[in-house]
Length: 195
Image (tube, rainbow, N blue to C red; front, side, top):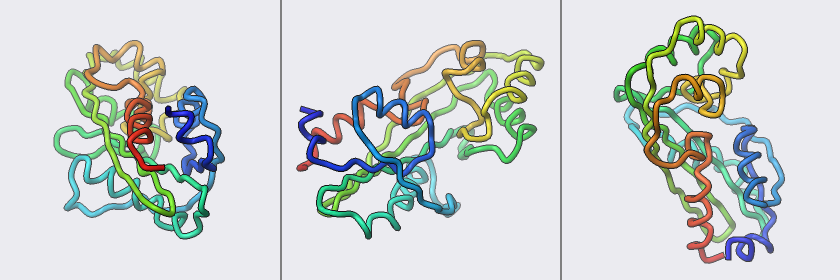
């Protein structure tokens, strides 16, 4: 059913995230990457999934105007929600170190919103996954933040990286969501849409 839904569409992904590219490829979705320059800012009034819903929709706002009849646009946003605040991407490796350090011995939520747009409709959905971090040796953390691609990641970490193997005790919810694109939610949403 999922393949039938998308076969007549020109799928456009507005994301530079390698993880999102890989996950869509693993689903067998043929897509074209489109670029959009947008300021990922939001009001302090927004909390929790309101932030990712807002940003996923904001990322579609310029591109939606030029969609053609058979285009299906995917935009997405991920944050780490910890101690009642959003952790986005770090500005530098020192900030990445401090960000991951703040996640030690506690749990946080990874929230991803997906916005699916056609000329007929727009749907925004989100997924939340609870992630439990263990105590992390300082040298391991320094090694990780110096050698890994931490600057492109919400919360400064990738669950599939070294830090995920040594630092994450367990998760409750979708693994692909922590990677930045909840595949099961995406498939179910596409299947439920009147495409």
